[in-house]
Length: 326
Ligand SMILES: Nc1ncnc2c1ncn2[C@@H]1O[C@H](COP(=O)(O)OP(=O)(O)OP(=O)(O)O)[C@@H](O)[C@H]1O
Ligand code: SF4
Ligand SMILES: [Mg+2]
Image (tube, rainbow, N blue to C red; front, side, top):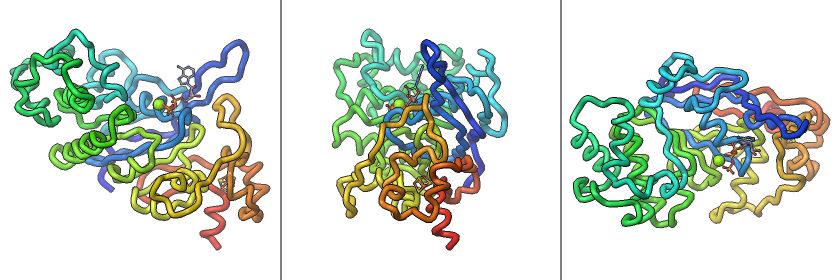
């Protein structure tokens, strides 16, 4: 593992509950590292806290507890420090039509970040370079186009160019291909890989699709109800998943050779995090009796936060740990 570019440590984010309801513990104790030149996929089902964590890593949400550090320095939550941070860590949003102003040309969309940051160099050259890097060539041909004149894939490339123009070290892409056709998805993912290889760019790719993680990431973090429950190199986590939740997510991929696991129980609610293992009410391994040896612990003993760092594998599951310890 390379040196960590971004480190999250013990991060908690809670949203106040409405009308006396308990708070929503959207991110409930997360450690995460992203190395220089590394692509990390953050996966998990809807509502598990991926976007909240991603926004926290970018300084857009201030954690209630815990710290986020970039290049070894804890984020400072002043507008000046956050503006400086925004140059180094950029967000790429899910829906390109939603994140592009329909009345702005491609040139204006990409130049916007430069103008906000008072860029003193050759703006036209910087915009052209960012468009070319994002695969829109020759870039000048796109300068005066409007979003509605572009395909979905081209719009997503414009959004990526808008992030690249500031020459960030990290991009955080929240469901970057969710709104695109399957054929275009592969091209955008290939682009992210090329940016890693050519520019040494780091990326956090947020997705509910483990298959996508497989195609793009160096490392994966699987999130359930505000916690990372399994992490490690993508190849090893996805070929030999240890957490029952990771196994369930993998079982529903089209290429899976195991029978699809249908998770029982209520969908998770971050305002009501169960005691013990937070997955226990839905765990197929516990329900089948396979985890009988640790069943009491599953229901009563919370699992520690998985420590980030080292690039090794980690799993937050009593059964997986007991099995491996013999
Ligand atoms: N601004 C907010 N106020 C109150 N609750 C919020 C807010 N933002 C998110 N939440 C809650 O926090 C939890 C996590 O939401 P988040 O958007 O981070 O999940 P997600 O994993 O990105 O889901 P999806 O895959 O659907 O995008 C959810 O229960 C959500 O309802
Ligand atoms: S700790 Fe127990 S309930 Fe939780 S995932 Fe592991 S086996 Fe299932
Ligand atoms: Mg989200």
